[in-house]
Amino acid sequence: MPKLKTNKAASKRYSFTAKNKVKRTKANRRHRLATKTARQRKTGKIQDAYADKTVVAGIKKLLPYGN
Image (tube, rainbow, N blue to C red; front, side, top):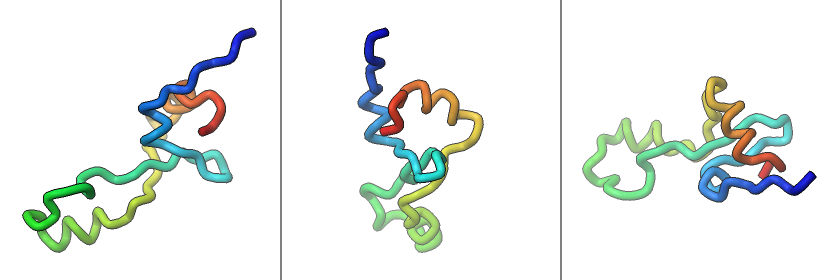
């Protein structure tokens, strides 16, 4: 059986925790922060969030070796 290829775009966006949860980075935190309200900046400050359980199976297919 040949090796499976890791999807590189998914590996840059997602990672796995020790308990095999899928971790992701919140959106809208890269640039143009001056135009966002303080509430938007504060709630988006958390860099680590968990992926929705409806998409976890698809992400695990893209990352077969748990990158």
